[in-house]
Length: 329
Image 1 (cartoon, one colour):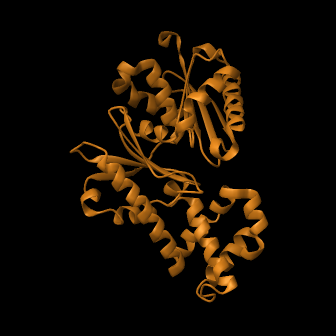
Image 2 (cartoon, rainbow, N blue to C red):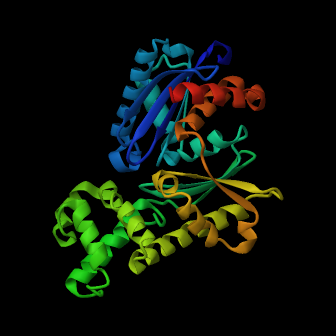
Image 3 (spheres, one colour):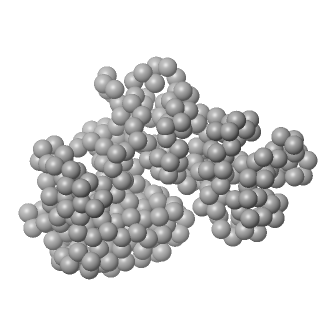
């Protein structure tokens, strides 16, 4: 089967957007597509599957390649417990697809960074989660959904900001101290926080997470409340890395790949906050890295692995080079 697969299709899906790319086996980009959120826990299983199937069809159509020649991999936020069901549902929509695997979006980060795909990844975007992978073994830390455990995420940063502003409004927090945050949130949402309740419950997690950049901006300006919000969330992420690191049996420096919109857009200061919150024994044993490739490249690397598993170490760098030059062109 693998010998007949001559194209790679990769998808990176999150709580806000989904990106898909089709390449040949050299890494030359043939088609690209972007759509909305595909996390099945947020948008629903059926909606997620339909979006992914539509994206695959669009990529095949734009690239003008036959489905049965394509090795596809979709790394989707929230898909870990649903990966087999999602794969089967997509294949029911596109039965001619040559090969398809579905997994969590953490796979995209690790596979984009190294040919082996081993190490720790920390995703901090709309949501947050940490994974460690070593010799086929997988450990998950945190990221159990925003109702239970999304510390360090854009959602949790935004939630704490809105919570602070609302407490200041009703008198449970210092109104004067919270005034810069309240005014910034009012400017961001075009109405004061106490008038946002209906909008918050109607629009959910992404709407709340959208104000996280406000917190970062005010923290950079020295606002103590926003500094404290970021401190709490950075410590939560550092605890995830520390726990994940205990799962790995390695004396070498472990790569910690940072992905997600918060990690990427707020680097390097956010990276330093997380690093400074790590215990010294862990900080000296890990290397925090922002990807130099888009996460969708990791999905493509996984699709390539299904075709060239035995050659992955030797073909990875060349594939990445060709992808980079054609993805950006």
